Length: 219
Image 1 (cartoon, rainbow, N blue to C red):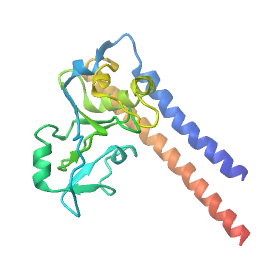
Image 2 (cartoon, rainbow, N blue to C red):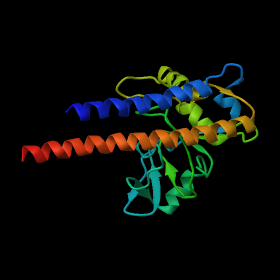
Image 3 (tube, one colour):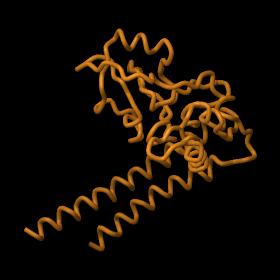
């Protein structure tokens, strides 16, 4: 029990460590500050109408498909190619764009890092960035950092039905250095993130082993 409790404590400490690193590296008020509307060519959201689902076809993503920290295509619904082609006339997710959660679990960002065709539901916003101003992976870190996440929660309306409106998403303030500095910082955060994830994996495995050991002892 003591070993498990310590592992749980260290697991949370590893998560907190990464968030602290994001705040220290990214909340630099000496950099230029921008509204999201200043650094995006388009901020829109997915269809507000529930589509007709099919057994297979084009993936249809919602907020639950990005909150794990990656694009999850395993647990998704599908729509027909015809409906997908109609939906992307208004909202067309492409490689390098950013998805930003806006209903339910709000304020989570993920760069689209694959070439898969898919459409999105209203619970996700789509950010198409001005590439001369911002590096997409740097902006993903910024949007997920504590200082921006706090803004997203303050701007989210409702209690039971939480909604981060597009008009409010455009008001989010971010601090940005020049592009080369953004890329350098993002690379360092990638390396730091990999180390933290390795720690989290070790502590998670320890907790699992403790649970298994307890059951074995009871038997």
